[in-house]
Amino acid sequence: MNEYLTVRSKLDLSAQPESLTKDNAATATIADSAVQTRAYALYQLRGRIDGWAEQDWYQAENDLRASKQTTVVDTNVR
Image 1 (tube, rainbow, N blue to C red):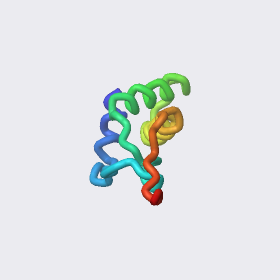
Image 2 (tube, rainbow, N blue to C red):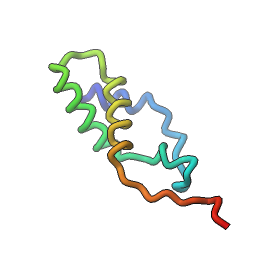
Image 3 (cartoon, rainbow, N blue to C red):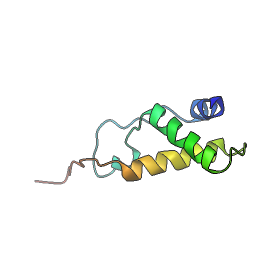
């Protein structure tokens, strides 16, 4: 599972959302531990074939974002 920690260290951590709005709700922060757990599950589902850590990480982030229920603030309401 260390391969997944290495992938996370390569990602740009400087782009953190300041607040949830319609524009940045898709980039809401997801806990690294949740992404790591999902990425490892994807690795296991593939039969523990190495070399896909980065793809698994991104897929895990996408899966978690899709399943996460967030309240989006509409900043255009007057």
